Image (cartoon, rainbow, N blue to C red; front, side, top):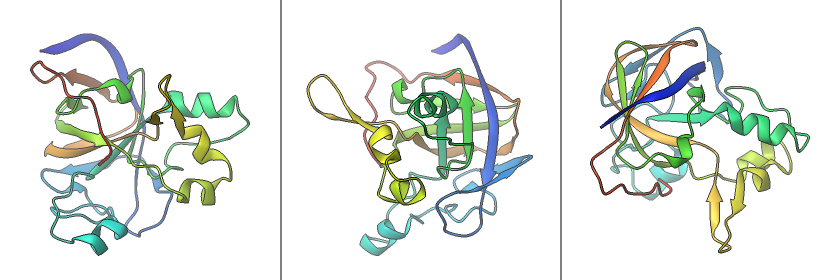
Length: 185
């Protein structure tokens, strides 16, 4: 099923060939099917995140693309934190899409060609506080039951490559029911 009622947009794209926390904003990024963002340190068939490589370098890379909703930046700004696109290491910053509410397996059509499949939630880590002290507690909250809520974006794999740039539309294709809630990947 495709949800055509959404008006969602890519507002920024970023990549960085070096393993560091923030990425470099770009005018355009190229997604490569099965790999991720061309030239990005996290691109590849197997895991590239350093802690995951140490645990098992043969794991499939379910974190080829990191997406964050710009609405998170608006929320943390009300708490005194100034966060810009690419600051938290995301490749694609969106607006108008509740990325955290998407079910696992959702396909996002980014611009005219690229298609990615949502694999799970980003696992926020202490590097967020190293970047900006106190920010980690803003992006990891708790729900009514006291369970952790991870709000630092989602991860995806690239199914169909293509260029993505600010201003591109995002079309959402939900997976068949029943939907599976996102978990950390």
